[in-house]
Length: 103
Image (cartoon, rainbow, N blue to C red; front, side):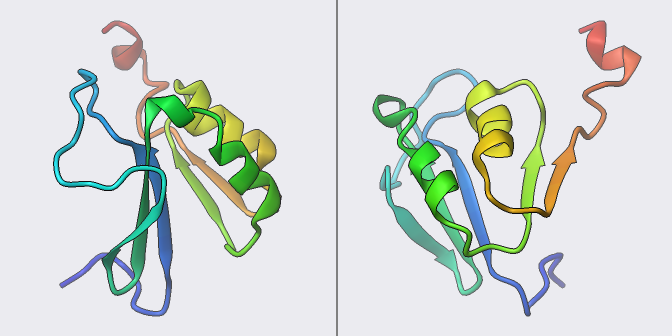
């Protein structure tokens, strides 16, 4: 069973390292890569921090922009500001809960 809809295609934009700044292995950076039949992933390297703004401003080949989180200027705020999509979903997933603030 899969949680993805087979009638949809997904593009995931993320960094090339984990939270501890350790680079991910066996990935190609700064280009779209096929992850599976319905998903492409772009692993952005730190040396190209703002190249993706061009992508958000010039490409509208998507129906929805789904953003997880609010604390990353690069991955949350800039896509919200520069995406031409009228359909934007911002998922805070518990980030604003009082317990999360205490940590």
